[in-house]
Amino acid sequence: METTLYNGDRLIVNKLPKTIANISGSTYLPGRYDVVVFDRPLQSTISSRVDHLIKRVIALPGERVTVKDGVVTVYNKEFPEGFNPDINQDYSEAVSTTEGQVDITIGNGEVFVLGDNRFNSTDSRRFGSINTKTIVGTATVRFVPVSEMKRL
Image (cartoon, rainbow, N blue to C red; front, side, top):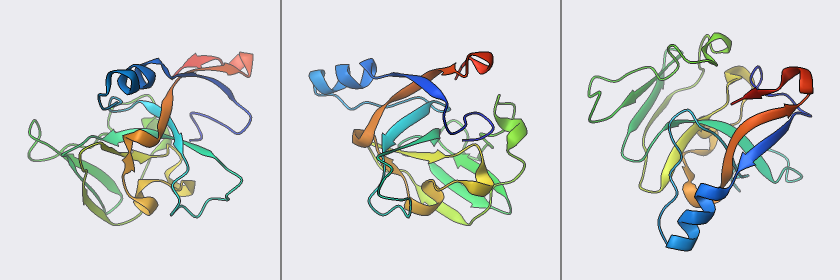
């Protein structure tokens, strides 16, 4: 997630919406662009010493995502011709291109996540969309280092 987050950063993770969804028996669905913490997918190549990953939500259930020629495009009912979710976002300066070839439609109860450091990120391009049941919460604030404190 560099340049947004770095190893050693300390975060506040909001678990309340997920907890409320669990109690009420509804499905928790984060918003597009939320930075979520989730259980490491079993099919991930990341060390088994890592319990959780942190990535940005790019696509929601029912949407089609493509990665082609270095560009991410999301297709949905509102944008049937597609849109690039990386345009005009706070993290966009760090994303010049997105490697890979992806064409996936996101299932119910799933989201497509990408790291902000696209050249060095194991994300949905490798392990597919993630089930929202594996999401622990949404990272809301980086508070350490104090000099870099900010809302996410």
